[in-house]
Length: 355
Image (cartoon, rainbow, N blue to C red; front, side, top):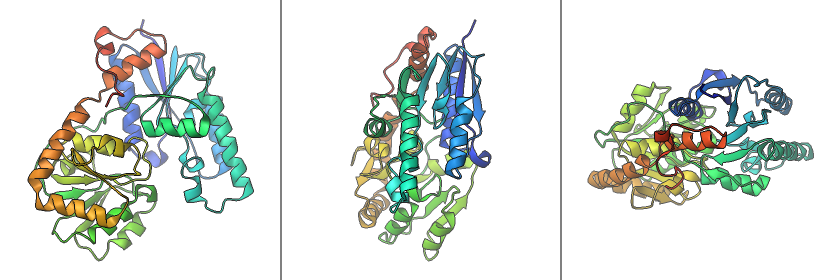
């Protein structure tokens, strides 16, 4: 009989489908392919204020998962679940209480500091044995954050994107996909375009809290176009014809955008403080790693706009990075951590973290 495995996740806000939701689906499908009867168990999670956050933590803690043989948690606060056979493959903790606390609350009150300490205590207890048998992280950035703030070590397993239809094409526009949020620093990319004289378009698909502010910043540059929400098929087509992909967030956990660009044979321009993208991108090899400086980013854009053949060479090297990251070995390691034997072909392959 196949072991029943629950992939426990916080449900998407307003039904949005983004990188996290693709991750959850990819993980479930990989577990099914490895021989498990896996299903996603989505639980509402509200982060609108601290009282709502506490209720969300309690909702996961009280969740009855007794009908499952194993449980895999992921994004905060799903790892509060109680089950004797629980492992965590962590996307991230609630970053506003971690590395982004001082950024969002430079003048935090004593009460807010106490709230932060309470979240750290909850997370540290939930992610450590015996509550969690094994702890994995999607990237070095997440693992380093766990070590710094929670004193915990995690095994790193980078995962691939599940965005369908990724393919190569021409080298025309610049692409900046993703959530329009200040942590993604879309404003930095807009500022960089002021240092680019080439008539290259910057296409920005996506929605988010800071969309209006970014649109105001770009209103005088006709080369910059905001596309709003696009379908997966449209997004794959935008990747296919990109000259390069801009991805300049603050301390990103993994950033599937980097791997999606590489899968399409496109170079990525990122920043030295962008977290995992700066580890995936080898400067001058498959893209560029710049200081978080608009002028320097603009110079790299100008270089590729003048030499599209160079963009093609860099992008082909990026394909090699994306090709080494696969779901099959991830599922094998997670099944083994739960004490189940994956199908032999699923356990084979290189460790997914060795990239």
